[in-house]
Every structure is written in C-alpha cells, then in structure tokens.
Length: 134
Ligand SMILES: [Zn+2]
Image: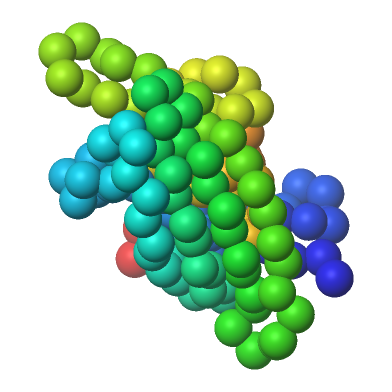
C-alpha cells in the first residue's frame, strides 16, 4: 500500500512524480464542454491512470483508475472537481480540498488537489544549496 505522498513526515512529493490534470489543456482539447464525457490517460514517473471525465455546468466528474507502473493493483477513485469562471471565458478548477483556484491539480493516485494541499515541490528544490551553485 502507501504510494506517492504517504508516509514519511517532512518528506515532500515532487510535482514530477504526480499525475497532473492540466485544466488549460483539458479546455483546449474540449473536455470541459458541459455534457461531454471523455476518456484519457495520465502518466507520471511512478503512476499511470485511466481517467473518465464528465463535464457538467460547473463541476467536472472524474473517475480515475490508477496503478503504480510496476504493480497490477489498480486503485479506483471518483471525485467531483468544482469549476469556476475567472474573467472572460477563462475557466479554472477549484481545489476540492482548499477551494483555491488552480490551473493544474495533482494526484498521487487518489485525490486531485492543488500543489499547496499536496505540499509539492519541484525536483530542482530538492538539490542542496551547495550543489545548486555548481
Ligand atoms: Zn488545495
């Protein structure tokens, strides 16, 4: 069990290790048109997920089936992502945990939350300062 982001206190997951749901890309691809049901795949360094998206007026219903790359145990999650209009024609997601607007939501296989809620860092932030200077 376990998975990305679980366990070890003080250990931050990296953005690169997470499944990312990019709402700018979803919108461009027409996945956010109300009434539309689409199917897609997401992949990170350690996870692969099959995802079903059902767009409603102001919410996106996700059905995610995800598995670690070297394991056959699939996890099954359903989640509602609230959508909000930000200004003219700009649609963005609201993090289901904190309610903040986000263009990208991340998941270690279960819930899609914003970067802050997952306490994510970028790979470059994990390099020690003395190494970064070289
Ligand atoms: Zn959040």
